[in-house]
Length: 509
Figure (spheres, rainbow, N blue to C red):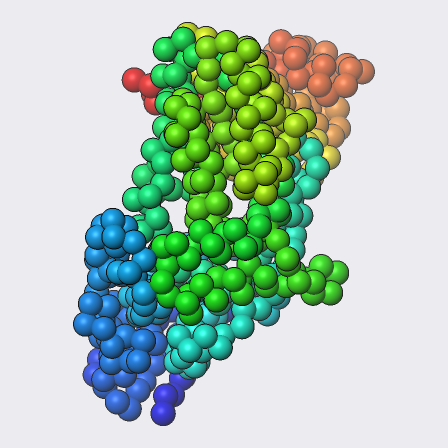
């Protein structure tokens, strides 16, 4: 018998972790209130069995943990992943034991909690899962191990795509997100040994910057013609049968295979109606990135077999050749392979054969000398984001605008720090400051308010009256000398505005 005591704690109060004789205390957020949970168990051997907060929880003998290699060990080490990858599926017939062990589930929970995200169709928040799992964890794990667990449907949401249109995302429930994360944690190290060195997307210790560096190396070798291939609605058209066949080549655990297929076929909730999925993988689930790499690894191996120089990041693939004729031949041949063998669709509107500096890859443009620059579309998307934050009719305080703008600027520069773009950054800094001047001047709604503000900022009285009484629009006023004098670079530094140019120099020195 397990007893749970909920005690409401004042908001913002820090509760120290306590542990005495099997009693476990922890703070967490539940429905915007902070509660103190005291977990007590009558049997000390079961104290930490389903406690995801415990740092010292002991493993207990469960049917799905009976293997000495699994119980109390990290999954990757227990499975001897290297040997499993070399010798095939025979060494991995029972992966569910590693997936469902306490340490792996706990790690998955921490990862999902770190990623945050909204609730699924069951409305359970991430913070509420630990409480539910403490009471119902055994039942959940038993169903998973016995193969009787049925995933819940995913909630479909649409987000705008950078190039226009909508991208459909599927949001699983918190429970299903954690289970999928647990599966990915065990399968990822097994498949990492099989994946191509030319694949960089959704892989540990690999990044978009590494992919760009590799592409630059190919261009420096004289391969300045690129076959830029884009797969159309990739996550929506993945063939389930082909994917399950590829999985079965490595995975010998039939229970796990059936569970993955259930996730592939889980329903989608749209406008209150659940419809079954017959193809594709739910974009937005923790397992989808790994599954996408498993599907496209077949493409990687085919390109390697043909001796092509290429870089693939998710469903974006660039093949580098020396001539236009060679590029067109490769485009035709590889398109046929993708559509006939992989049963995927090539987006012919976005795919092209061109000089490397006439297209973009991962937001950058690779020049013919191998140097990187920021693609024009990336600059325009950044400016659109700035426009939305500095929109003059938002009606929020200037300090809040700065607080929202700074992390956007910092994150954008961190991603594009490898580009040669100092002149671009100077122009962006100047443009952003003018947008902010315009926003701040508009906040002085009355003439006298504007005049007094300018005078307080050091503008001579008669000069401040000239600008305050001007019939020009706020954008024109923001470019006047009085506005520049009042809201100069030092003033922006004082209010905490992030300077792209200065920080670019710091990042590259």
